Amino acid sequence: MNLFRTVFLAVTIIAVLGVSYVAYRGAAPDTTGRHVSLRTGSGGNSGFFGFGRVK
Amino acid sequence: MSLAATTTTVNCTSCGAGLDVLGGGRVMVHICPYCGAELDTQDNYKVIAKFDGLKRPDSPFRIGMSGKIKGVDYTVIGMLEYTERYRGQTWRWIDHQLYSPTHGYAWLTIEDGHLVFTRRYRRPVWISSAQVERANHPPTVTVDGDRYRYYETSTGEITFAEGEFTWAPKIGDKTTAVSVLTDNAMLAFSETNQEREVYRSELVDSAAVSASFGVRNPPVPSAPHPMQPDTGGGNDRFVQIVALIAMVACFALALFFDTRTGAVVGDPVVVHVRDIPSAVPVTIPDVPGPVRLTIDGTPYVEPTLANPPSAPVYAYASLTLTNADGSAVSGAPSRARVRIGGQRQNGLPGGNNHTELLFPSTLSGSYLLNLGWSSQGPGSANNRAGFQGDLTSASQLHFAEGTVTIRSYAGISRGYWLYWLGVAFLIVVGVSFLRRWNFNRRRWSGSDWTSED
Image (cartoon, rainbow over all chains, first blue to last red; front, side, top):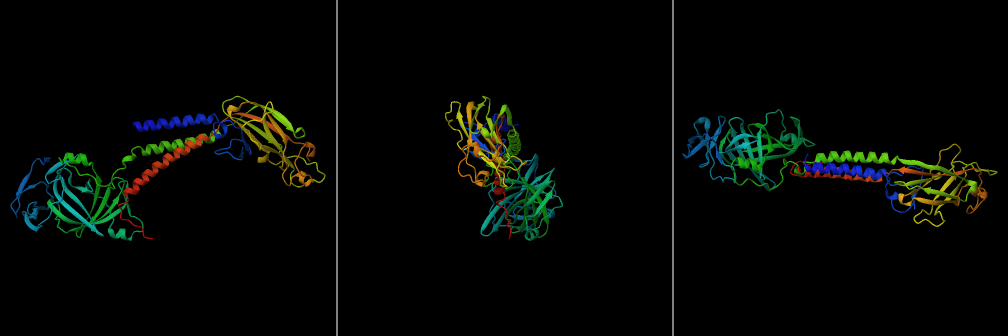
């Protein structure tokens, strides 16, 4: 396997694992910072962009 | 330059010049490079035609040169120049007839500075120019596992000839060839007045072949050749596969993490509607990740009106978050509320009966959640009962029972950034396909196929 492939594979694995850890810790735009987010709806996580969010 | 190891010489029967005989037993004619006489090798080198005043094309390969192509020793025994004229444009290419004692005859062509190696292709495939004319879509042939698609039809005229050939070329002879292209090779279905033959061509390493033949100045490509390999694509397939797998993994993990909505921390707090307004102490634990505070109103409440409306009754409780000392929380939502009632008996809870406050991990601590009465919407039980304006106390409610339940959840995961990473991998895959598409667009840009609407 050439150097490019090795680096690309390594970067990909590190990116997926790193972002998975971030996801595991619940990081998202509405869960970081210093404001409380309001969500209305039937509960659960809001998926990709959230729903019914009102500041 | 290396010359063939052993040569036999004959004298031109027209001008007397010494001619090296290099081409093996199937040679039919020998065209004298000095006087242009075409000599019949099957009939004591008798002159059968004479081509005067021809201008020798500029080729670094000369008759008598030997070298290796694809591991086989070949000797240049003849040279032809073809010219094609179409709509005011002129194309020229030079074919070198090659001979190998072990592998027979072949051609080495200089085309736009590229070296193309061609051999007879003895397979039962054929596409005629008439078929191309009649076709609605570019004709294709599949042979030896390769799928070839129509590229062009060209008619070349011989404008120069010298050396030995296995047939008798004449200046002005025209050959029509239908060419089909696959990734790294072309088939040419060549048709003259007398015969038709199939040839298979592929590009060879110009520098290596030129060096092998002792050519000091190898031809320099002037434009990309349609058979030229996708030089940028050595890692394309690898990148596509890895990025595709990573993209699927990202979306799958994101969906999985989105299902981790957390576990309840502590006991739920239940507030009865008769106790509103009320200030409920809530503690946001100091845990990694966000904490979710859910506020759920009773979906169905029994109306206490003398003549209850057919629509379910409901009321909205306003939710205000303050610090434990009653001071306002910076960055807290200002329009939070939750509905109590509004659903039919035994119905499922509606979206309005559920509200959430999401606390970042940086905002752990003690707070007060102040529940008050919000204004009711039109069509509510109170409006129908003649009540106008905001609710200010539970006594104004026209239902007796109902609760608001407050729960805290920790251990929440979110797939948000994994979705974005998946999108990034999707772009990587897309760019890779786009690059490949652009490469194919360029290599097919020389095709003369036009779709008629």
